[in-house]
Length: 242
Length: 206
Image (cartoon, rainbow over all chains, first blue to last red; front, side):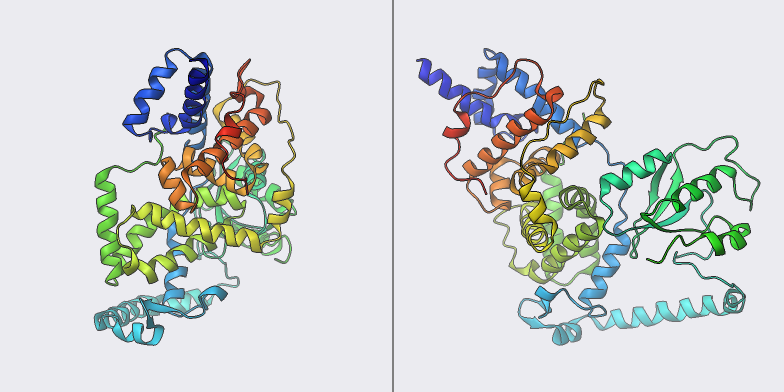
């Protein structure tokens, strides 16, 4: 009898993670719940398991943007970027080589791509001259800075924990990215009264945050603040060569 | 409490439909499935690899296979189990080929993480992430798949290509180690049943 009870306890103990995450089948669930009514140790353990579930499913502090990654993958699928070494024999569908797969693709796609390109060029033409006046180019998708957001590149090998710690100590958080080139949008966690500035000017808070990040050796570069940051940004933007 | 990432039957049916469309070369369906999985995989893989770039590489390697092999998906398992199974193998290979793996597997000796401060959820998560780093990769993956992604024991076994008992054993050892590393989590006076690990451990831990 005692041996049977001990055995039951061990079985229940092993199943508690799935009772906590709600995935224990009904048949096993009934038995475990019955055991829980008479076992304080398992009841305590279930509380811990639920805490683990809660902590590990808390909303992420870092938000991930799938768009750039997906475009990179589609470039790879379309053969615009090399495949990884293990995938040197790309196929579009089962057993169909890449060249044939490309031929299989609906012809409408090529027309659609041409149309998008033509519209894009038409939109670009009037602004091309103005863009050519810019002395500096940025690595961000827009030539204009996003108000209240710094674009920052960190060392690629920087562990997530260190990145989060760095930002937390600087009173900042990730609000965008990382993009295809690993660039994050960083903003202060709270905007202070001193942090606000007239339109077009850089707030003291943003300047302080940029300076603090630039001073960290793990930050490759920080750019740009706003249009008026141009001269300063040209000197202080890049902290060191990537 | 935030609900685990378990998906209901409607979501599963939607994913099965997307898989069928992807098998026919539907790029919109592919993008939708990619977006569905990117967040949960990015979080899981970043925690596992500690590197955004490596996590992204594994996600794209996984979906590269999904795109190429969608026609091979027969519906024997849920799409999520199939996709996570591919991701698991890709992540394991990526970790093996990176220099970090050697360090990680050697770092199995316990380093107690203690704090005088009462634990808030965010702090507990920070401590927990440090504790998870000290687990062998297979145990850490089992923890992530169970607690974070909300998979059943059978699904984890399918994803990790191992027997159900091995999953239970990996989690048993992971739980015991986490309790040692996180006294606040362990609570006062609680301990694992004697012999439970031995009886439930038919296979050697990897």
